Length: 329
Ligand code: UFG
Image (cartoon, rainbow, N blue to C red; front, side):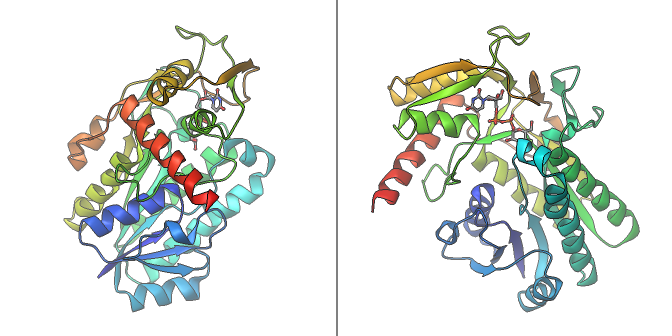
């Protein structure tokens, strides 16, 4: 019996593979390596390079490896890119997910875990959101993920098939043992960008707006350590296997930090100074969004281990330094 991880060569997927191996699972990774790296896949897992919409390949993998669960990360993740290329996002995130779900159902895979996003809420009126907050995605990215959630819901009603959709807040940090981390080129995420500035890979960084209605004028987010996030997926897998039924749950810590607080943390932990320029607001940014994550704790028994901004930053910085050494070799 094994677990199929799509997108397992990417940032979150590569952490998931380590978590599964640490828990004694057999793992097969399917990744077309468009943004991921073959070296990011743990040696104990088998990497198959290919597309999730190649049904012949996927169904052959499911049968050959006796796959009982799919954890689906593969997809496109950049919000502004989705605004410029909506059809590309609906293809990668919605159409190809449909194909993968169909393969799963056809082959009798009963457990499916999906990487959803806080972007399904758009810009909420109340900054704290629970799973019943109205769903008003403001980008094709958020809509493309929500459409997949809805397909899963309907398939779970129609077939012998159950799913967990985890709505991620701001995933950050790196494996505490530094076996993997965020290696994406041209990253746009705040903690990654700030760590690149702290390690001299950028000569400065920008803050997108300081005139928001928040205590220091910058946007507020809930930063969740990637290792805690993938552990939630493992707990979701166990729950599905035990017959726990389908579930949609937020995955965040329930605490928000402003952009300036994050930058201060990166400067403090790295003990470096770097130039920070204030520029215009970035289109599409929600002012503040923070998870109410009780469901994740009560339904999955999730007990985060790295719920501390400085710990997240410290792991991200260590990974950035390791990446620099690796790229120099
Ligand atoms: N920011 C800066 N400078 C930067 C990068 C980011 O000021 O160089 C600010 C952004 O304007 C925003 C905050 O830092 O206010 C966080 O931005 P990120 O790009 O790190 O993350 P987002 O909150 O925009 O997006 C994340 C995920 C998305 C997901 C979304 C859900 O990256 O995939 O959360 O809320 F959809």
